Structure formats: structure tokens, C-alpha cells
Image 1: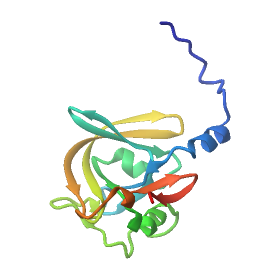
Image 2 (image 1 turned 90 degrees about the vertical axis):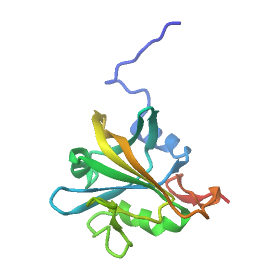
Image 3 (image 1 turned 90 degrees about the horizontal axis):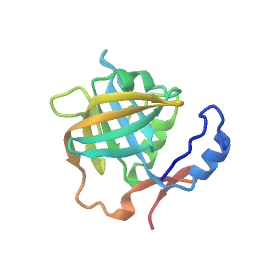
Image 4 (image 1 turned 120 degrees about the vertical axis):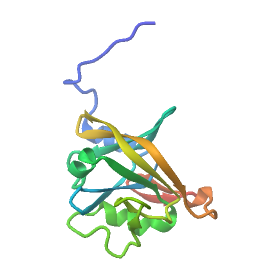
Length: 173
């Protein structure tokens, strides 16, 4: 089998065409948090989170270079990825906004034994050591090695999962 490649300088589709087509791909909504090393809490909403490896357990988060928490996330030693449920729509929206205290009034605490911001009622949360950062286009892939996993409330069902689809939040019905 042979493969052909095209020059990365000559995209076949525009950024807007790609964005419009990707809006048809439903993605789970997460909030990624870290400590900035100076006692500050940082975090953002992310829908580009993927498992990478089972052995060792790794996941990746794509963080836009324009994100206000990009620098803190790519330079942090560890971070937490929270999978959100439909009941977390306001939290997801809050962490997608700019120029506000994203953590105010959210019920955030710290992961036991760390200074990492953590939402214990998330559907699931993954504590990660930064394994690798990989600049790719206008994002940085943040690869995390899992050091702990927390499962949220047992009453979660598939219809509770919060999804990003066609540029808005949805839940299965």
C-alpha cells in the first residue's frame, strides 16, 4: 500500500470549513485545572480530550495557544481533567469565559494532598503528571500520565454526560 502526502503549507480546506464540519462531531465536555505554581488556580473548558495509552495510562488534552490558561497548563507539573455531566452546564460555560474569576462560587476544593483545583462532583476526574507537551498547529497537546482517578456520584447515567455539539452544550435524551 502506498500513501501520498500533501504539503502542510497548502491546506485543502479552510479553517472555517474544518470548524463547520467538526461541529458535527459530538465531544464530551471537560474542565482542565492546574495550579500556576504561585498559588493561583487556572482552568479552562476543553472538548478535545482523548485517551492515548492503557499501558501506561495516558490521556491528552488539546489546549489552544490563545487560551488564557495555556501557559499555566503547558508549564505545570500536573493537572486534573474533569468529565462533566449535564448538571455542570454553568460550570462549563464559566470556564469557557474570559476575564472572570472562573473558580468563584463553583464548589472547587483541592485534590487531597495537593494544591490542584478539583471538582469532586465531576462524573470522573483524572489527576495527571505532565508527561509531554507537543506543539501542533495553533494548539499544544498536553499528554498526562494518570496518577489517580476519581469516580463521581454513582447515580450518573449515559444521559447525564455533557456534550459539545454544533457549538452548544447538549445531553443525551
